[in-house]
Image (cartoon, rainbow, N blue to C red; front, top):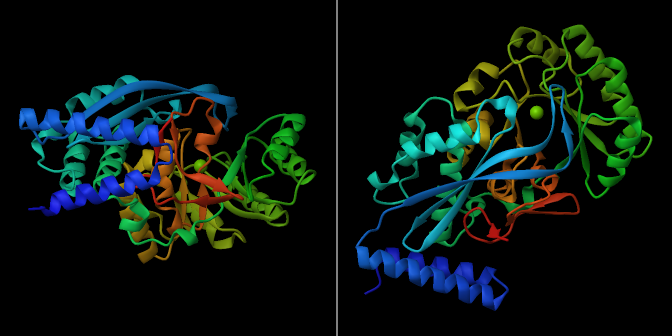
Length: 386
Ligand SMILES: [Mg+2]
């Protein structure tokens, strides 16, 4: 007799097999599943097993924002196995956010998934993971993403479908042009020509900020999203800059002032001709109600909010509060970027170019077609290991 679980497993295998083109690859994966399955049968164990290892992402270019420059990003990759299926996850740790490979591994050592009988108990599992220690949001996201990938693979469906989103509604992604010399900015702008939106990191000083925009405008009229990364110190100056930017085909402003300057930001938002979006000010679900009125919208990132479960809840809450939505990422592999892309149909703006900045990506996942985020029918978060 076929149980419901067997049915779901078979459906998952069929969908996964259909998504794989290389027959040798398919054979290898089928064998891996059989081996893992038989091991489970021998031991009689049907437990989830979490494993993790550190990885250093090499950046294609030196990456500069208002605070710092760097050429690598530390990452921890996770895997959760269950009944022959493997879900992949990732924690990425830009230095300014406070987590490190050591702190993530220390956190993951404390996570005991053997106390749960099924990966389908996502709510209970993530409530527990969140309670293991405060903060550690990227470490928590690495468990959440692997768990979602695993469950989607068992069901044989991608998360955008499980959530009931319409893949046709995905926005264009922006491509980031960092602070640099005029010559380099011009070159990077030409490199960004396949993209429909350019994201510019401003917030240094007036001369540099205007040089960045004028240089990009000397190459292209493509829409620009501006991220000030809390760099503007005075609300009157910030509003003047926003009005100047509004005349230059800029579509939105991310985090104009310090996340602590809520009243000043509300003053700007009330007067701004462009939407003002919270990034540093919006970490998790509980932050959203306090931002209503001070910002037009929020930028959701999986590494800030502990992963896909909470990100999905943030979408609902922000919509209920009539706030506008953006999805962003850190410098991360196609694993975490593809997980974030599952939410893209609900977003007005997307900044999912983190994987494009990495020279040694380990996964193949979400692709950009003609500037637009394109979701596949591959199950889970829609990735394959390279
Ligand atoms: Mg930002």
